[in-house]
Length: 323
Image (cartoon, rainbow, N blue to C red):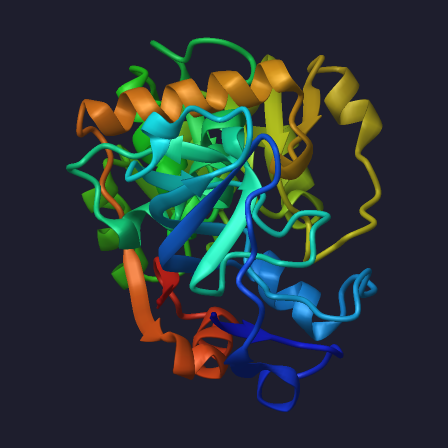
């Protein structure tokens, strides 16, 4: 099969290769998926660049993707052959991910995809959509709540805005430009604040009277603002803190509001949390309630360009590789 791969870490142009690799065969309990698309996420790019040590001598990158089941291993219902599916954790703690013509993986990691959902959109679900669902719903229903989603133009945040609105919440989000403000309003945000404004916290409070929950991309950078805008007994669901990976926790301000800080890492959800997220996303897809934003799509031969696009700060939407 044709695949993108690397045998050492570094800049995309220096280490990414495209060539032939052995086509996998499904083991017992596995399915073989003929992939149509592969999602390139920031975590994939960071791993290739060296954020984490390589655990395998050769890696086919990317955890997300979509396609059709072509074969099944022992113990898997043959009726699944021909089924349209999307993939989660395709390259989590495994060497061979979705940036290839085929992937073999446990049957439960290939989720049935509605016929109305295109494969390019489905390559965005494993990390962005499941993370968004978990950040919004980990602490129960959101109807009637006011939810702050930071960095609303990001891929996870855009899904979080939509999912919170589907659940009946009022959503306020932060962005850095007028272009991004229009982008998040189109996704359903009720209120938008430029996080670069010196009075951003005051604006959020004036608009909401305080938020019940927050979906946070940059916890370290925004911890003080969160302490100002959260209502007592609120919950912060943080899925990132790249700008300040070892922040000083404002313990007393958080304690005196009895705030809960929840960390979200989509790769290691409990079985119960995973099932809830899968069921929730599937229900929204079947009801045609979600829209999907693709920033760029590249053929496999342009994998270097795809990774470099992910690294660009102005990107709005997902980057997809077609196979």
